[in-house]
Image (cartoon, rainbow, N blue to C red; front, side, top):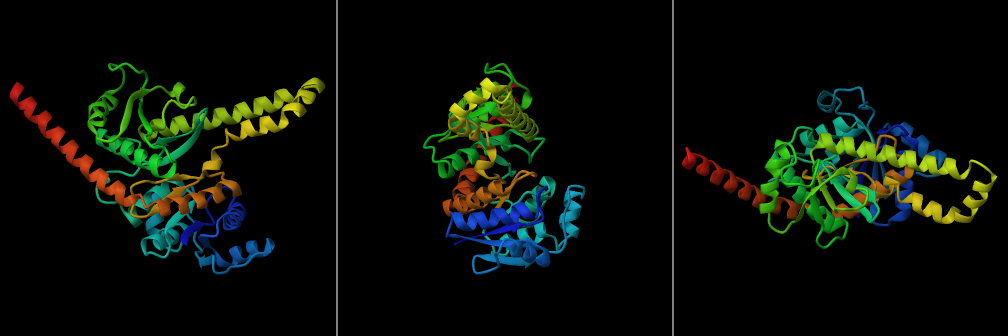
Length: 352
């Protein structure tokens, strides 16, 4: 039984969608236990509205304080110890829960994960990894929000984390890994991208296939897409906005007149199936990889389906037990990076 701590107060649609998502997840899986963190009175009232109550697989932990989007992330994590977010994270740290899920403040979740749980041995930084829909199914994008100013060795670690995640949780035997750039030619890119290239090429057991341009991503040109958080977050939001615009445009077109409506009736089922592939919520949330414990961030506007999928995602992640493999691989890579740095410095001295 995997126990997941759920931040009931996190997100634009809290607490209703979070409660609905929890109840839906309990129906989907018999091997998950959910702890609801938030004001006990509010939680019990919401459960009562739905004809549900706490039990063996649905616990309640009173957490009267709330960390909002306006709160300073680090200060709030340090000060609001009775908040649903801090108490949920502490449950993971203390072994009372296996994972923590929230649709709340991204900054606070990132800060809380670092401050309360800490990184696994070997992890230099912890990226947010999100699954995005593509023409071939789905790809993993990281970092999409945690490390705005990145270093070359960090991004190489993101590639390693993404590779292991794709193998263990997405079932891809040898995931293709590509680095986001403004072109595919060797001479293209900024200083960071050019520094990453030789390091990632030297890493063992990674199917690195070079650069990828943003326009190639929706076609599914890579299984794992590596970038810094500034670029990744901007790409992700454009991706989501474009998908939303396309869905609305298609719906408007097929309901514009009588003839279009007749045609829409004929293709309705197939169209629904295709449009569903644009819905990123089907994949759950974005895990913060490299922590001593699992933390998953859902969209701020997450509804019940995304919360439910995020909870099931936590169960799958925990059962996969990837942290031990991650730590060993990252430590090995760090030795490689150290050796490459020493060789580069020695070569520089000889050339002087």
